[in-house]
Image (tube, rainbow, N blue to C red):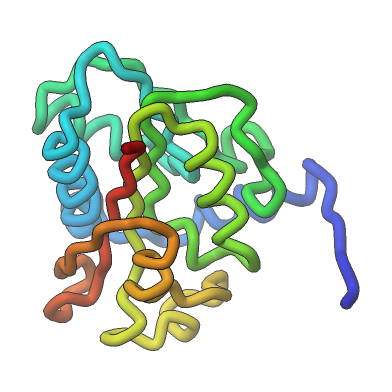
Length: 181
């Protein structure tokens, strides 16, 4: 197996190209943020909690949490286009109450490694969203998708899951919640 390494500058360049691609409007993506917020509030996220948003992109989860749900906690974005973070190798440098990882795992070669790293550092829990491979051919949805994430995989990693409509087809998205017992 050949391992390729990329420099931070190369990662940032790829992220710059990604971030400037045409994007769907926020309201078209909002269903995934709503699903994550619903799970976080169901699990009792509080205004005293710190949430690390891994793969934060434009930090739209923070917008949804604050504007639509009135959350006033601390929000920490982690994303390659912000700081060159390579999520294939990143490990949380400290504990956080919550981690969110929305529409990220399907982009990784070894998503379980990142999930395990976040679970080890979450004092309260972790919420994820991902396309549902039972509805979509996840690999053909986006050229950067490399690992379809199934509900069975998420259950094996300790997540409770729910199905949602994120992309326009009934139950085409999965939201998962893992909490520290």
